[in-house]
Image (cartoon, rainbow, N blue to C red; front, side, top):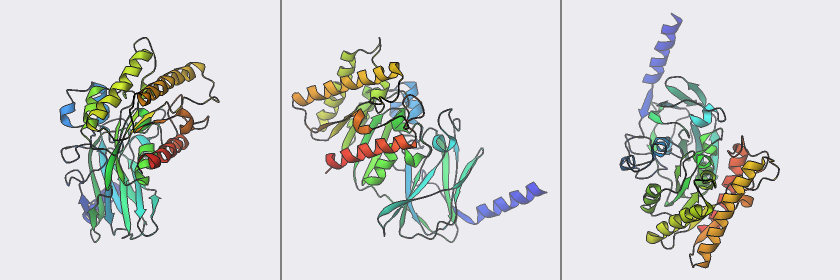
Length: 357
């Protein structure tokens, strides 16, 4: 009897809502070829046969994907399903599979955040209550960082309105990177460093970061080259350790090829080369990882200086020291926690303010 009453009340609540499907309505932001994509993935369908299987599968994750909208509702509910596991040993469910709701206050010109009540069942639900009737807010709903969203709908009370918006007005910032750029291991999607950068600039940030698979590969470079970007970020060093299968000379060649390829069609677009974020942490005393990170970072710096000496302009480097991670910044050997993500974001923001001016 109690279950029947619960079910009836749930159905009644559903009937009192108006539901919106941003995918069907083609209002999903933060990804390539947005109008062509038929799911919440980040890579166009034609790339499935061009990239390695793990890259394609990770490209189905919704890292960096978000929905911008306005509403007069004081309550918002989102329901969705995911295809993968809800969490990982070193990353919580809220980061791997959860949502995050921010709002830009057009009156005070700042970002605000609201916590939501969540239920991670077969159908996951988030509900934000008592958030006020904020007609001057531009809402931004971030999707899961490390899971594939099968379907998603946004509900508001039937008396309220919801209108999609597109708040990014400038050319996109395209980021090609690793698990760190994908969002490991922050606790909420909005705390990923790419999300933080996206809230500072009027540029859409396109997240092409693939856990363990950011390797400066040609199919991804080809996709990047099709984007008329404000800036390209190459942050792949954490996945390019010097080993028996990758020499310093080969890493140099990968970096040179990436810059040269992007420069063919975009001769003046800024390109940022980033050292390993954990490459300058003397307070962490694991000698093997320290050596690995520093070695790849040294190669990147040498390549950067070589390209500059050859006349390549609008080329920038973000160093491990500028990223500023310390012994309180990671959950393991490399992946930043929330504090680490903020440090990485602040370093990029500082550089991008100079690069994009």
